[in-house]
Image 1 (tube, rainbow, N blue to C red):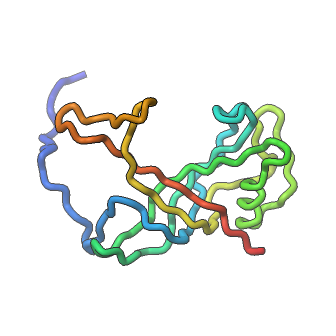
Image 2: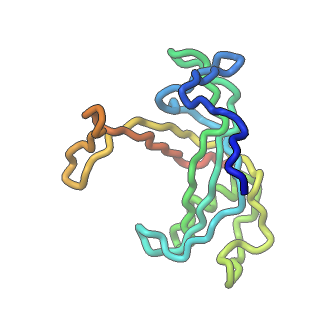
Length: 169
């Protein structure tokens, strides 16, 4: 294998804005968004919090096309969320809402080997749900802020939250 360069990439170059001058706000405004399931869910035999089985879905915002915010026009499409659906008896409400909202059957059988529903395809299914994100400080277990060692400023992160999936009923 050769160690010849194929070109120079200037990591200091200015990032070009989109052609329609849309902006990325510091947070996703609270609103109802249309979501699309990106791929088949992952089966988790024991969730870290409850120890119960669940399905984990990767979804993305696919609408609306644009939202007016104080900073300008914001395009939320492509914002990714994770949806956790318990499979524990008596705790399947989120999965039931997902099925109702996407027109899937509300009675399912699980494959013994994979833990996934038999004969059900989720990829590409769409639904509506209110969602938002907020910037929050990262803190240690003792609740003191974690500081950036270069600037001394508190580190922050985006905390995304999707609320109850909206069903047609």
